[in-house]
Length: 580
Image 1: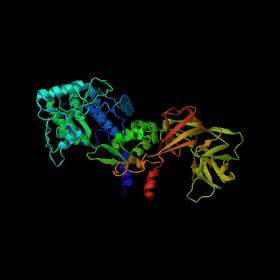
Image 2: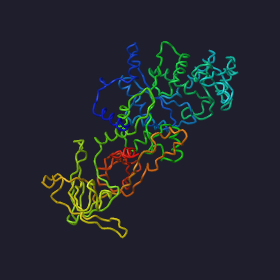
Image 3: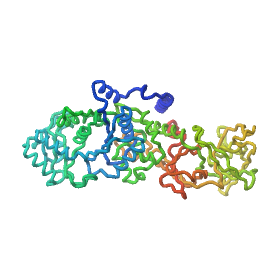
Image 4: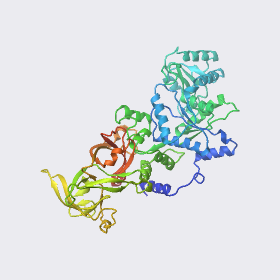
C-alpha cells in the first residue's frame, strides 16, 4: 500500500469511527497523569501551561502543543497557564506577545493566568545568589570559544574552568558587578557547578546568566543580566506550581538539568513539577523552524507572517482555515513519543471536511468565456433558487440571477472532445447548476482563432426543481456559471503549497529556499462571482462550486473583492506524485 493510500485509510478510520472522551484510548501523557493520580497526586493540584517564547508567530507545530496542554486542562478540569518565556530581549517583542494571545483565543482556548518569566527575574536572581553561596555556581570570564573547548565532546570528558574554584565572596562580588552593568557583554557568565565529566553534555557546568545590555519589552533597562532558558524554565514551573511540564522531544536531554535545578530550590511542602516530552509536530512540504520562517519574512519571500502560504496560525487563519479544522488535525495526528512527519494532506482533509459541512456554496468563474443562449428571451431575467449547503438543512437557500448571457469556465468547453469529456462541446448538452440544460451549437472567434462567444440553445422546460419530466432528464455534465449582467469582478489568490519538496529543510547540502514552489501564489484578476458575495464580510468562507474552498481576504473591500483559495476540492498533488 502506498504512503498516500495508508494516509487516507487512516483518515477514513478516524472520520468514520468516533469515540467519546470516556472510551477513547489514553495517549502516553494521559497515562502518566493517570498513574500519578493513582499514586496519590491530588487532582486539585493538577496544573498545566503553554510556555511560548515571544520571538515569532505561532505555527501549526505550536498548535499541537496548545491543543495538548489546553486539552489536558479541559479533560482534567485543571487550570492552564499561558507563560511567556521572555528571557532574551534581543529577539522578543510585544508584537509577538499580542499575536500569540490572539492565536490561542482564536483556536478556542482560555488560559487561567497570563504570566511571564520576566515576572520572576528577581526571584531567579535571588536563587542564583543562593547557588553561589552554596558553592553550586561560579562566575567565568573566559571566552565562549574557550569554554566550548573545555566542555569536551560526547566521547571525551570536559575539563574544569580555571575559575571553577573561585571563592564564594569573589563570585558574589563579580556577579553583583555583572548585574550592575560593570562588565561588557560576552566577558562574564555565571555557570552552574555540576560535573564536567557527565555523559550528558548539558550537565557540564551550563551557563545560568549572561550579560545583555538590551531593553526588555516589559522590564525596560532594569536588568543587565538575563537568565538562560534552562535555569528559567523549570524554576518558573516550580513558582507556578505546574504539575506536568510537557515539552517537545528536543528537551528530553534537558530533563536531567531541569531536575538538578529544581533540587537546588525544592521545598518538600510544595509540588515538584514533572517534565515529560512528546514528539514535535513536523509537516510535509513546509518548514517549522522559527528561524527559517523569519528568514522567509525578512527576505520578502512571503508577504509577512500571515501570508496564507505560511504554516503560522495567522497565515492559516488568513487562508481560510478554521479553528475546528486545526483542532481536529491535532487530534487525528495524535501524540507521539518519536519524531515523525505528518502528511500535509491530513491537514487539508480536516479543513475540507469542516468546510464541506459549513461553507455556503456559491458560483464563481475564474477564466470566463461568454455563452449566448440564443433562444432565451432578449432582456429576460429570472432569479433562481439555489441551495446554500446540501450538507446543512438549516443553511437555507438564496436567489441567483439568470439571463440570456452567462459566463462559464473556458476550460469547460471544447469544440471537439472524446467521450470522457463530460462538459460542454458542440452538439452536446450539459446542465447549468440550478438552471437549465443547454446545448452548444456554434462559436464566434477572433482573427487569432480564440473563442469569444459560445452560442447555445436551452430547453425552457428543463429548469432545475421545476418538477417537469424535462427537468428530470439526465445529462452527464453540470457546469457552474454567472450571469454576465450581474457578475461581480473579483481578484482571486490561488494559493498552493509553499515548497515543492516534501522535506525542504531535510536536504542538508541544499538551501531550503531552493525548493520554494514558484507557483505557490497565482493572482487571478479576471474572476467573476455571483452578486450575493457583495454582502460577505472579511474572513467569510465559501465553496466556489467545482473549484474549491475560498475565503474573503483581509485586504478585500466592497469596491474590490479579494478571495483566497483555502484548498482545492481535489488533491492535485496526489495526481502529480502518482505520475512520477
